[in-house]
Length: 539
RNA sequence: CGCGGGAUAGAGCAGUCUGGUAGCUCGUCGGGCUCAUAACCCGAAGGUCCAUGGUUCAAAUCCAUGUCCCGCUACCA
Image (cartoon, rainbow, N blue to C red; front, side):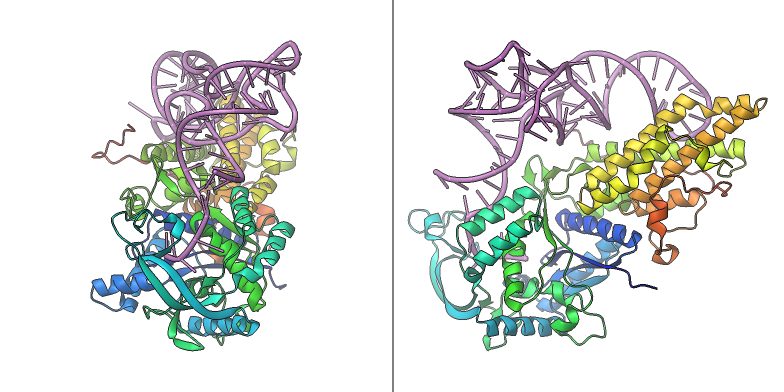
């Protein structure tokens, strides 16, 4: 067996200061879809997610709750893992930045950058707002040295010893990187932001803190704790270690590195598109293929989050509608990269229209026709005998290639839309052709029977193709479709997928086997209903 | 202040580069069909394409000015 090509992709490593919200679920669903898609294509995939667990905020929250930071993190990590399981997220590696092996990677990485001469000790001076926990630029302060967010509070002067990373050394290399590799930052609007940001000149940033201790010590100076980015980002490296590897950079990069794609929220774009590549250059490591900054969920134009109090709990949505529904809505209704709004009525409408009515019902009505008139077998026809201008064949023929490009571009909405187009055509086609009438006529005219059989085949095959191409997004629904079509495939079970050539075959229109025994017709997607007590009328 | 992205039917979007009957999905209304998950198919209503001015035989599309939204403008992840 030839070694399959490897593909690795990451979600952000989530800060486990609270239970996961919709904003954590979103990129994770997207990443899972890509990972599943690449597995279907036969790639050897490493899908990395995890948690960022150090820092003052976590230390404080834990203290407030009267427990150790580690115990605090353990609990929240569990809530993330539980959500991923419910959402049917099949990650390969969950990296926690508190892992022992991560300490070793951070240490070695720091050492490399240190030896390169890119780390130095200096003073972090400036006005500090205690409420924001943040240094403020003098130009942002209000009269009387008050914070522009906490307007009643006066900022304090701080003069603190910190280690700094020489980001300023990397301005030219970064600019060259963005230029030579235009796809490095996506979508384009985010790329522009970053380029402009870098153009105005880069300041070094501090990578250590002295006023708390929940983190790894600086190897050369244990009074300092390594701060955020020189810890969290390196989780992407640690995650690539095999279980029995010595925790060294060399081992981390031997198989899966560099990452093909980092999926992140636009809020942490700069750290991934500027700091991270600079850090990697300094350490002499290869750069990832691309950084994709996705958008946020808005509720009436307001960002959803715990602070705004308008967040919808992913677990509540799961209780009501299930994983496939959430996955489909997030990926189909919101262009990946743009902000999207969440509206529950729309959620229910779209899911019912697309998956229950268009896709599910098309399979259901066709399957029942086949059961009544064809002995519950895939019609026994010559696939090659279906004329090239058959509308379903015509559209289905190029769909696999088109959808592949859309997945690669992370254009999930395009995947769904183009597949749905085939499905809608299927409904139009069956109505126009009226195979139920042909079957009746077929009792005295074998030619009519043949015609009906061909029509049924073309529809079943189109539904199969749709299910296959949507499997990374709605795996459970696709599995039900495949099983009703007589396959023993479970899109959640890699062992049941023949990775050697499955994609080539199954992404093609016209591979459904004649005379394959069909399953019994049951709705593959039950209609959703809005909760009764919550008439979610839009104002 | 600087840079960037927007403003198109009740909602969400496409169309703008390469001017020429304004399109898609959801929702609403009417009809058809009966194979189907009260589903599907067909049709209709619904738009001063942000405003004003200009170029042109012709502007959602090109040009100018203005209005309103949103993002970025460095150490919270």
